[in-house]
Image 1 (tube, rainbow, N blue to C red):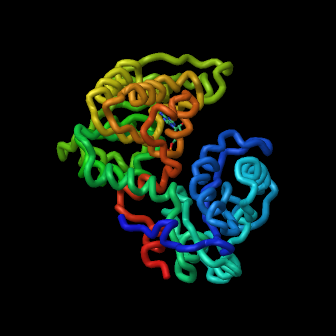
Image 2: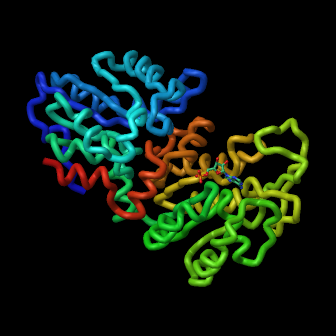
Image 3: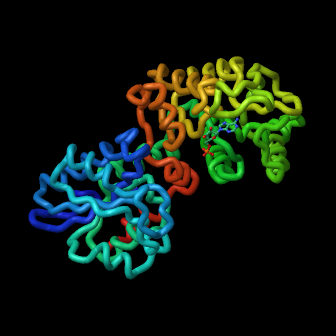
Length: 373
Ligand code: AMP
C-alpha cells in the first residue's frame, strides 16, 4: 500500500509537526503497567526531533466520554515520554473533547492550528474516523509514521502473499464481533482454529451441550451454516470447566475446576481449551509457516484458565520456521504476561485495527493519508 512517508514531508527544520500517536497504555493507580505503545512510537518521534521539527504528540487514553476526567489524564504518559524523549510535547487526552470521536471540524481546526505538517503513527486508532485521525490530512501535508508503515506492511503481506501453510487462531469472547474477520480469514488461510469463549457457539452449532458457557444463541445458525459449508475450521475437543460454586478471577473462592469433553453439563462453564486440544492446536502451529493469532483461548487473566492461551503463545514463539504475528489487544497482553513478546516476529499495537485491516484491506486513517493535501 502506497502511503506518504516521513521523508515525503521534506525539510522539517523549524517546522511545527503534529503527531497522532496511540499512547493508550494500561495504567493502574497512576502507574504505567506496560510502555510498549510509547516505545513503539519512538522511531517516528526521534526522526522528527532529529530533523529539527517542533514535535507535538497527541493521543487518546481510555474512554472518558468527551469530558475531562482525572482518571484518564495523560500525565503518567507524559512523564514516561519525557524520560524517553524530552523534546516532545504531549497534548492532554484527545477524548476529553467530544469533538474527537464525533470528528467535529471545530476540534480539527483547534488541533491543526499553528501546525505545518501532520504525521499519523497511531495504527491502533486508524480504524476510527475520529477527528485526530481523518481531519488533519485534509488541511496539512501529511505522512504515515514508521510504526504505521510497519504494521500496514506486515498485515498486508499476511493478506496478500503469506507463506503456506497459513493458519489463523481466533479466540476471545464473541463470535458476533468477529464475523467479518472470520469470513475474510476463511478466504486466505489454510485453516482457522477457534478457541476462547467464541468456540461454544460453534460447539452448540455442532449439537453439543455447552452448560453455562458463553453462548450467542442468535449466532448458532450462522455457525452451523459455516461448518456445513465445509470451511476449514478446527474446534476444541476438550475443555477446562468450572462449576457454579467458583468465581472467575477468584481462585480462593472455591469451586471445582476440571477437564471435560465438549458436552458440558448444566451448572458448568467452559473457561479454557483443554490439554488435549491445546496439544493439538500446538501441533497445527508447529506445522504452519505463517501464523496469525488474535484472542485468548480462555480466561487467561485467571491462572486456572491460562494454560491453553499459554500453550498457543509458547508454540508460536518456538516455531522459528514460521512468520508469527500476534494481532494486538488481549493476545498481545497475554504474550507479554508469558514473557514471549520478543520471540514473536510481530506483536501488533492494534487489536481492532489489525483485524479490520485484514478484513477490509484498508482503514479510514490510511485512506485519509493517501488523499492528503
Ligand atoms: P475479546 O475482547 O472478545 O477479544 O475477548 C477477550 C476476553 O475473552 C478475555 O478477557 C478473556 O478472559 C475472555 N474469554 C476467553 N475465553 C473465555 C471463555 N471461555 N469464557 C469467558 N470469557 C472468555
